[in-house]
Amino acid sequence: MQRPEFRKLLAISVTVALGFGMVIPVFPLYAKSFGVSLAAVGLVQLVFGLTRFSFGLVGGLVVDRFGERFCTMAGLLIVSASSYAAGFSDTFVQFVFARGFGGAGSALFIAGLQNRILRIIEPSAMGRATGAFRSSFLVGIGAGPLLGGLVAKHFGLAAPFHFYATGLLVATVIAYIVMGSRIAPEVLAEEGADVAVTPPRRSPMEALRTARPLLKDFRFVVALLSTFVAWWTISGPAQVVAALFAEDRLGLSEDQIGLAVTLLSIGEIVVLVFAGKASDRYGRRAVLVPSLLVATAGTVALGQIEPAPLLYFPLSILIGASIAAGSTASGGLMADALPPGGSGAAVGVNQMAGDLGYLIAPISILWVAESSGFPLAYLLGAIPAAACLVVAAKLPRGSTRSPSPSGSVTA
Image (cartoon, rainbow, N blue to C red; front, side, top):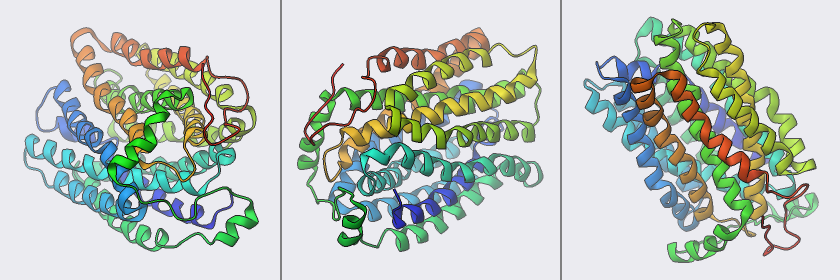
């Protein structure tokens, strides 16, 4: 897994994550400052998620047609413009539209980065690679929320959006430099990697035909479900809903909420290295099933802590750890299932699964919270993880990698 380019890609992740992390704790509070209801706050996430969901497959097809570098840079520039516009919004409608068109850029740059990683890392190391890449992201996102809370407290709720936008411009420059290099065939040969040096350029129809058989691969299906659960849990119970729950019911301040989101990231960082190695060594099921069990229990418990607000902090760590562990197994399942040379379309579909969770979790859980209270809302928030747990339990023990590129694993 010692790819020089992989290590350089981490710089993009850290730069993007620092700015994104600054926005996380202030986003729902900034939206609420326009005088809208809790459900309307979820509408901002809905529009952003709907746009990104709509462009998920498009991002994959752009990768297949124009390459990972172009897709990544275009996406970063679009999100930067979106974040500047969000920070300068005068009305809630302007804020919604600004965040909305940023969803298209997010789909593009995520597709570009994920495809590059899947192409340069062999499946047998994908759990560790997923852990390393997510850890680099969390280095930035872990410091971001606390910094964002402090910036918002002293300079206003719009300031973190401007910081984020500027960081994305820096990330674009890094992507231009790092992703322009080619992998030397002799280097790959020395490392014994079965990795495509130059990805094939496919038309949209060719890309879709390449990805279609994966929908019958049980590993790919479980990866999609796990990705859905991760983004559902992050955007709903762990971040957007949790920030409003902490302010309205637990009486926590902006900087305390930022600290809790930082602890969510710390929980991820602590477990990632071990989970990635375990996923590669003992199999995806050995990591995914326990992580889903913890995510289910932690989400339910979070809605019951109003009498004991300080439990918000350790539960944030626990939920973060479960999400991180599941992500290493999910990334491994994707690598196990993808054909040689990768598939931008398949990665786009996986991104759409995550966006679907990101899309519907905040508005649905907040609607239940507003009508029936937070405890019931958090019960709803735990259902996807519980359902995915039942499905993931059918994965085979040990390795799920195919003995041949065309092999598949069924339940």
